[in-house]
Each structure stands twice: as structure tokens, then as C-alpha cells.
Length: 153
Image (cartoon, rainbow, N blue to C red; front, side, top):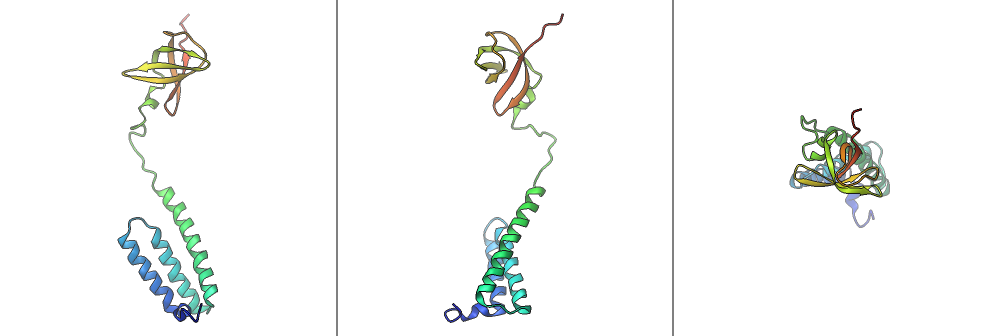
């Protein structure tokens, strides 16, 4: 391959690849090419201090590229956890825990329906007849887990 692409063994090749990848990063959304550009620059530096054949250069680039992408993914994943004063904003059903209602449809074989406000929800719990007063104990996805309201006394 060195005969076909004689410039691959050149130290400057990897710096040029790095600059091209940085330009690509500016033109494309995301931050993926940034890490590949760093890997290319580090490969150029490694090749300057420890001259490698083209297979060695490609191996160093591949290892650095994978390592930097994985490291950045772990770093970025931990950084983008916005804290909200309304954590259940688009999950209104989580606000239904503790809410009392009655069964719209009897719970049979563990499944039934309840109506809260203007919405009918799937409900799970022990088998109970229609109209039984229940309380929502937890939410899983769009299913409300309910229990029979215990009478005082």
C-alpha cells in the first residue's frame, strides 16, 4: 500500500487527516468526528517519535479512535442529565400515585381499567368488581397498579 499511497508513511499525513476531520466536524452536527480528529493527530505525534509502517499507523489510529470515542461517550452521557424542577412533566401518570378512584372495568386476571380525570388507564391488581374504590400504589409505563381502599374501622 505504501507504493500506491506513498504519503501514508509521512508524519504530516495524519495531521492533514486530523484537520480534514475537524473541518468535517464543523460542517456536520454532533461531536463524533472531533474524537477521530484527535486520534489522527495523536497518531501523527506517535509516528513522529516512533516511526511505524502504514499497518502500524492504521492500528494506532484505530485503537486511539475507538478508545477516544468510548471515553467521550461515557463522559458526555454523564454530563447531559438535566435536573428539572418538574421531573414528571411529560409523565403525568406518575402524579397519580396515592390518588383514589373507582374501577371503570372490573379487574379480572389482574387487568382492568380506571378513569382518572378525563383519561381511561389500564390498571393491574387483585381481581375486584367494577365500581370498587381503589388507590393507585405505583405506575409502570402507562399501567396504574391499584389496591382496594381499606375501609376505616
